[in-house]
Amino acid sequence: MKNIAILTGGDSAERVISLRSGQVVYESLPADRYRRFLIDVQGSDWREVSAGVSVDKNDFSISVDGEVIRFDAVFGAIHGSPLEDGKMQGYFDMLGIPYTCCDGFVSALTMNKHLTKQVAAATGVPLAPSVLVRRGEAVDAGAIVSRLGLPLFVKPNTHGSSFGVTKVKTLEALLPAIEAVWPYDREALVEAFLPGREFSNGVFRSGGRVVALPVTEIIPETEFFDFAAKYEGKSQEITPAPLSDSLTEQCQAWSRRLYEALGCRGVVRCDYILVGETFHLLEVNTIPGLSSASIVPQQVRAYGWTLEQFFSQLLEEAISHP
Image 1 (cartoon, rainbow, N blue to C red):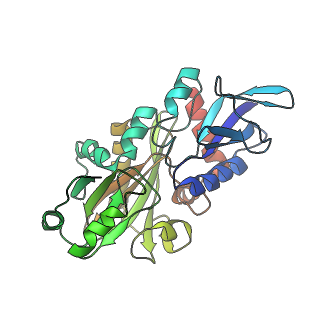
Image 2 (cartoon, one colour):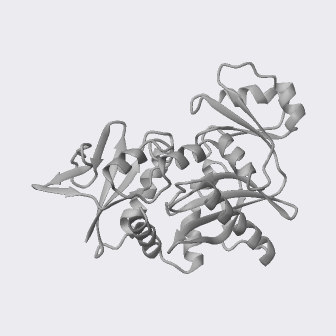
């Protein structure tokens, strides 16, 4: 029986979502195949939840009732820092412990929305025009609006779960929206508004083959797909999405291509806006939400798998192809 460390918590504003995701993974992994240990990471305090014992960072082990437990694999369920941004992966690489998510380089790259767009552009995927603003630099709001138009979105460049995101409808609202990013990030991404329908598509590798899950359409009750829409039931999420076969395949083909081009591992979720008959990439999430309210679990069920099957597959793929 394999010992599995499920990483949860983390240090960003997304911690609350990570705790939910980690719990779902813990409850879903089959106990007859894996010894499951939920590891809450918060700053330098890494602690196994049920036993309340600290992790020995020299070899990533724990001691429970006199038994020293070393792990066969790590299941990554931390959204944001220090896992989704790639900080922890090098540590596991040095210890030779396989993990279910992207490596450190790919994680750091995809956490940066601006840089991800630069790499994704080479695949040919359509993208929303955008401008990067760094904290402390002068901002010409008029020039940005002239270039991108109104409305537009302002979001933290390296943060998720819609924290610090604002939909800007007037020139006067742009600078305050940029200021609202600074509690979360040192860079703000100002992105043109694309009128269209919003979709999301999970993709993973199974037996060496890249598999795109069924597509989900997101219809938020709020102004856009914000925190309340994502995690508090303020949206309608339809899986499989009501799309023609050709549009479904277009979306899934982009997801598979991006997964390969970026060098992803584990499950990744790509978010899009459909404008007319063309999908435009919004962002790539390398540790997507796995809570009961999250999109990927909905897509897994629509694919015909249980979460038990899916999470087990992610683990076995990581162990077989470290």
